[in-house]
Length: 121
Image (cartoon, rainbow, N blue to C red; front, side, top):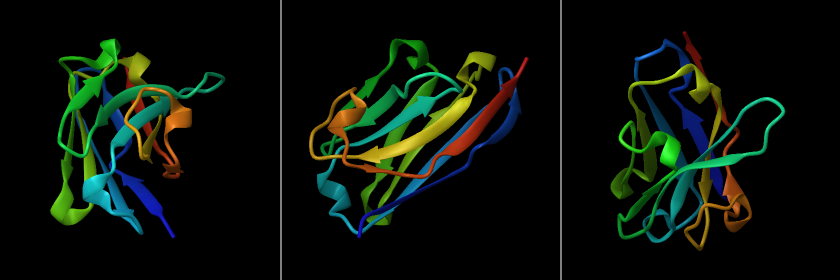
């Protein structure tokens, strides 16, 4: 079965950096789009960044210039490098995989369990 496991979350001060990883198994990783979403308490899950099987990327306006999504197909792993973090970035971050790249959560079929990112001011 498909499994996505996130890691790399934690607590950081504003202006700091974190690198999230998403290890995938049970799917043809190199052939599927991957994405990161975030969800803050009481809010809907929101798109952060996506990467197609060909390497094309897409970002939410709020993270452009600060976050970078990448993938290492040989390791079945996707990454989210987060720089210049802000308190408003605080949320649970989820990795997602799907057959169609997009910014809507319903476009993704598989989800990880999430990793908490907390940014203090």
